[in-house]
Image 1: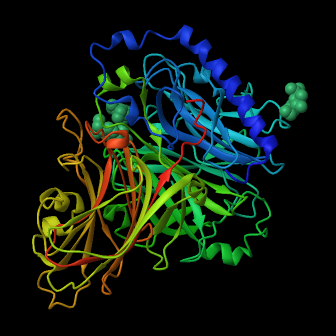
Image 2: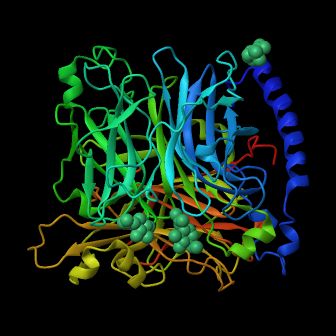
Image 3: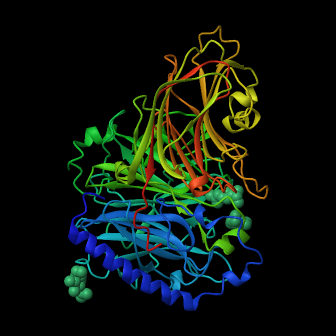
Length: 596
Ligand SMILES: *[C@@H]1O[C@H](CO)[C@@H](O)[C@H](O)[C@H]1NC(C)=O
Ligand SMILES: *[C@@H]1O[C@H](CO)[C@@H](O)[C@H](O)[C@H]1NC(C)=O
Ligand SMILES: *[C@H]1O[C@@H](CO)[C@H](O)[C@@H](O)[C@@H]1NC(C)=O
């Protein structure tokens, strides 16, 4: 935000006005969404998010084709211009200088040709050799069935840094299902890459086989126009339909710098020698339609065989997740400005569709995250992009504060409905950790957290934060850790750390989808130390455990803990003392957000 020059700001403000005007036009076309509401939403207007990405109103889902072009970040997204439920999908389009302040433009892609008449669904951007971005997306071309084909679109005016208009060439569609592919399950093309010296582009399309295996098909092309399917898919696993595949190289373990998707035909570019590229690890992510979560593995890309091999042979079953909460249809892009890989993901609402209609909006994007390979090489680390820190305002801190068993401490002095909290905990002793004897719970974080929620006293933990809490703490969302030891291991096993978000007391309204969300944290807690960062944004609680090893985004709708009534506490419901070595909480300002 601070980096923005005056000229850029003038631009943003002008665009903001233009964008506002365009929304007025839509209002006339709108089916009177609000008259359908028979009762006001239980969701208070103050629960609309302050700094998470949202259009001014209506429904959004998948982030599409994130890219950087001539000084601007672009985000496209599945958007219903006519209401707050899924339908009438077009590609919403917003631009930003810093990934934090956003200005909405006219939709970039709308149904207009035979091969997208009944839907313009998700897709990705590829930067071609001459620097032009191309968008590949899924079109629906039949009214009766969701028959899916892939289309391409190019900017009308390459000199326009805002890429306001997109042209669909007449040779669309450029990929149609065939050769046994189920045409209703064939979508979400990835960013294309050129890996080998053969000069061919490659991309993936998500699908499912007759045997119900999720599959990522490889298509190749010399000219970005005629595409041929490779004989074998890049990868496949017994999980049901793969939506929104994402496939990208990552740097060496522990190296935060991202690696650009290979797009130059000569493979000796700035990514190093072909040999070094061969050794680079890759990530394959798929959005599992059946489970509605995003799963990934780390592995290698065998260019000769055009196959991806996960490092962990059980990886496809072990199910590492980007986020153990509400986070789906995600997509990364390489940011050439800061040389990092940035992850966007969609978080839906947890209220009812009737509430969404009544409140007029549904869906947000999670705060963009920088992703890189953990030093162990086994998983990714994720951290909110540094730009979000420009929104930090007034702050308060706690230092060296011991929280005794059963105690809690309120963090006072700032409003915490819209806040960023960083805390370092230190557990006095791990000796009292509960034994984890039930194998069904030991392998299922979600069930474990459901059985041992924040209110169930433990040995080491539960300890953590109560956020969006009411003054009497009747209402609160707990974000916490709990440490276990495995039974029968002779006491030498590494302690098991569970991270959990428990929203079961987040609202007095019982009519909400409020499951506990949890993941294990692969961290060494033998020195007793663990950190937590939580981005609180009115109806969003987005948490990063142990430096981004485990992430959980949860949507909550307090009835009391709204606006200035929202409070923040540190709690300890275990039998071991927990020291807060340091806690800093910042109020978060509101950025420009699409004219809202
Ligand atoms: C293309 O975009 C540039 C930069 O916005 C603008 O100056 C120019 O007039 C545009 N050209 C056309 C044909 O619209
Ligand atoms: C294609 O997928 C749809 C949706 O899952 C399913 O109902 C249909 O039976 C499938 N068709 C074939 C030929 O497998
Ligand atoms: C988000 O909403 C909840 C509650 O309606 C559903 O259970 C989830 O499946 C849904 N998530 C996605 C990704 O659609």
